[in-house]
Length: 268
Image 1 (tube, rainbow, N blue to C red):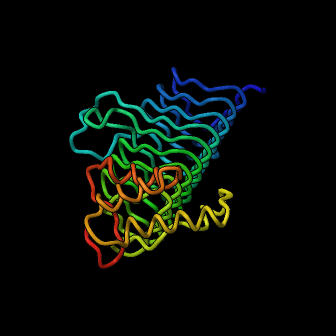
Image 2: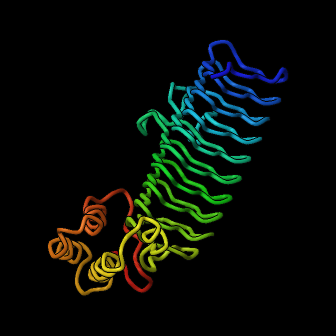
């Protein structure tokens, strides 16, 4: 692959590691502890600071800010990291913060994610792969987002919330509780309204598989008794269905936050 191409107006500080085939556009600033893997493109006016690594084939668009000090009053300048995987697209004005010492020290993103304009990923977040964050969606600190999740425009995710694999968060939703895998939540205080059927169909699930999953979902979230009891019972009845098991285990393992429930139901 060709050598890196760096615009004469860009500032690449001594110590930065720039892989072959990278393109660094006009007025970009790359700090001394930054590592860009092969073929990374910084289009222009991008600022990358701190101990930040960006994986091969990723693209960063103008005015994005990566690796600047985390927005956490407890941060005292300790070394922490921002690790971004391969083939990610970070559009204009996206910001990603590194981790904090109390949160594990790393903010991490997987591969093939697409973050639209003005998205923010806070300190100590962990993102999987193939995630889409629409314009203005924001993650507070310590949030976990599973593979294939979709966050609608201006959605706001509270600290320590888990967004499960394949979940869908509607635009403008304020999410203060965990969202189960493949769940779909909407509302200014988000409520669970069902399964993300579009996402599941895109995965290639057959009609019979979808029907079985919907039946188990109803047993867990629309039955009588405590949520944990319903989930354990549904898991036992459908133990051969890996999607049901994934949702059940997500609920039962617990976290800092409650589970987002359907309207009219509490924590269960």
